[in-house]
Image (cartoon, rainbow, N blue to C red):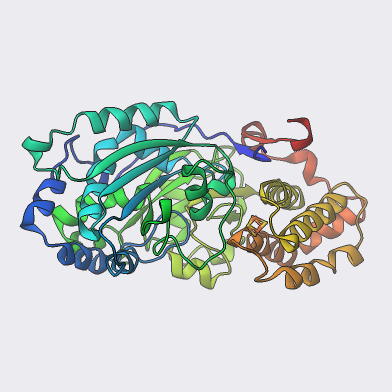
Length: 433
Ligand code: SF4
């Protein structure tokens, strides 16, 4: 199985990072918090006061997840730090693992202490060799005595295949147990019965890496990092931006500031037609909405999502039918195929948009989209079944004229795509792999 979209992002210039990621390479807070300076409950209270949410895409409050873990019975619990980053274009977790491995380890140790985990597994993409090396070096450098890091926590780095569905936490657990990455039916949830049947907290790399700052500087200092009072978030700006790559963006600035200041605008200088701020499963945000704040709640209200904050922008010269077609193809390829309704939905949406894209579609065909979505709704083991919904729905809503132009064989935009984007996005034919 291969990703049907590959977005090649190269960091242009130095990433702008908040104090959260400006610490020296040393493990400082893990020892002091675990050795009694901070009780378990105090750590979780701090995460709650900081309003830290999961940075892997779902945005679940980190403190609530930690408390659910604490409530699980049994002497052995596991923390899995999820660094299996598969969202097309996302490179924030790899960036942290490569550039700030001590901070990832430190955050993981504090969290393990807080939830009572005695095993920590760092799951990293098999192809991210620099990240794997950096993490292994960081673990080897831990001096248990000197740093008062609890010696009773077992730490290990595990590699996982580069398949989109591995990002789903139960598929990740299946992989770590040596099986095919197929999402599990829930309940039981991983927190009740996860890796090898033990209570398992799966938490994203970025979420974990934010914990040392919160523990050492306080919840208020963390929240004050953004004008919205909810801190900051790592964004990966797509290759079409002047400042492509990873930046730590204050939450609560306007979307326009996000694009113009942090992203630096588009490389080709063209006006932006729309953005997709949360990866391929997020809806489109239009220019008339760019004065709204950049935060998770606002993006949901606008019919989109923050997800793992891969910021893609499309210029007025790009064909959105083509982009939506690539997106539908991506989900059809990445569906693991366990659920008949998911197979049906992702394949039909892929086929319909491809037919329209290739000039063989009709409005009657597009009218079937909503019925297909309704038939599949809630019928999957995991959330991938819902992922094509926002992009296709908001695409049909905002770009109806572009779909009509394709149906009527008069789309001129396909030939006028922005060069930076075309050079950096590959559509891979799964049949050829
Ligand atoms: S919803 Fe789709 S991706 Fe998820 S388990 Fe079912 S078939 Fe697989």
